[in-house]
Length: 325
Image 1: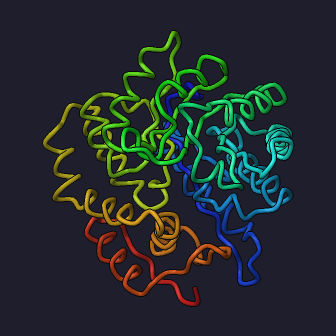
Image 2: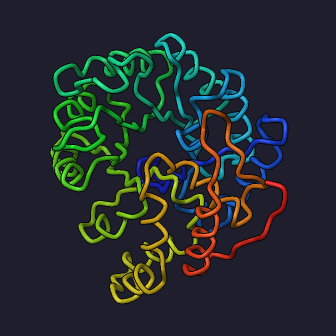
Image 3: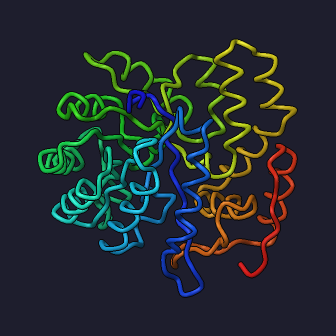
């Protein structure tokens, strides 16, 4: 298996059945899609990411989802497990459950709950808010870590943990192998420099598919931690392969004329609908049997379904008609 730090991790959506329970059979089937040889060689999956509605799962459900992912992957590609709970003790327990289930690594989400942490956290001034929790998880589980570094928005960095706080976390926690690029455009360009200046390698993991073109142009796409793989796997691999082969004409043709850019731009045009749109698009292309979400997650608007249908087809992604969503 290739280096864990240099793979294209897909943050998987999670299907639910008509009773609102995790649809285990559908989840297994979806993982089998990601095990196709072309993706298996270079990819990995993240079970229980934000895209998988981890915030609204019970501890037992989170554990079960990781068990299924590990069993289906069968060692053919790595599985990282999302870690989230409203308390640090709960997060440690979640990480230990994932380790016992056989996860290859952990995908860490920052603390949440009170306004102090959700909207007002000054990560640059108080990095210990998250660092202390990461250290507790790391001491208990001792597994490779990919971060999902969300913080209160700033003009300089967008939604991401600022550079010096990120540097401190990477210095203090040697198990951090990848840093997800959830920053605004200027912020991620600064983060490339921060991560490249460390005394060890921490992979730059692209997030939103709409910026892969820039990452590839700057030769900083070490890997990904992205929900975009739920809907655009084939054209996304075509695009990356063209860049890797220095075929810029083909890469640009896939990106622009091929419709991949427009598909990504619509998905990411409204962050309040982002994870829902991942799910709608995964359903439209037949990866899951329903776009059901777990409340309080929103439900689709008719125009979202019609727009995504049009954009998927324009990007040469086959849309499969399903009834009874």
